[in-house]
Length: 230
Length: 33
Image (cartoon, rainbow over all chains, first blue to last red; front, side):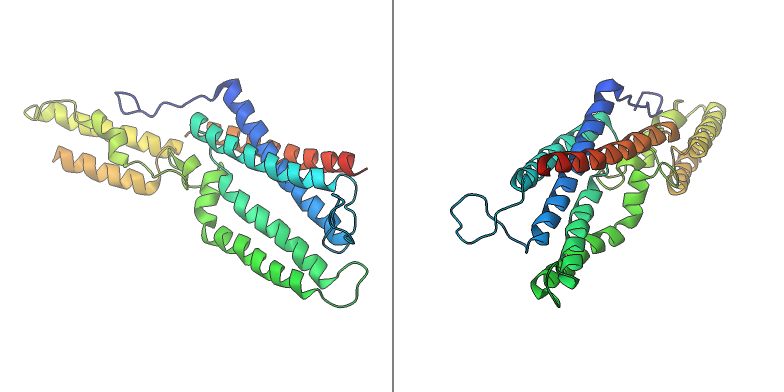
């Protein structure tokens, strides 16, 4: 915020954009690897071993241990970098989708293979139970937090100045944004103060039009301006 | 955050998700083939 009460846009620069892009791509890449590796193991019965110690266990398909471990480690490290990058460069965070994406995708695997196990008749109850647990674990938080998540992610709709991080950061009081702008004159200068109020209202209106202020923030700030000018 | 910047981040992160998915599939295919 500047001295005139205008929120100055923080430009991420090429480094910020690249950091956010690469780290988010890394998170998604890790989850995709884990999802596909899990399916490969479930195709052969749900377990495998490649260390030569677990005798009698089916050997893992080629590349699966690497894909699994690489997917988990790469995904976690990328997630850390992504969180840091979004905070540092002021990007709207998509991190709240990571948990639902993980549990819904793995839950889907459990449900699909539990209902129709490859090479087997009937159901696999162990997998079905996991699916029934995983799907709500991912789905319920997604539904409950749908509104703030959508506000954080989508570029349209009622986004305020901090809408990009609506879930992760507490919203600032609207008065903090405009307070320095509407009362620059001493209390004795009544006519000048009146014009200050008009100016402040005009600025608030412009901020609302540009989408920088939500309707609620605009109303709250207007009340303060009018209260201060009375 | 202005609408322009919100669109910028939205498009950038959408592209990142698409890239991550494509990369994950390609890496998996390469590792398991």
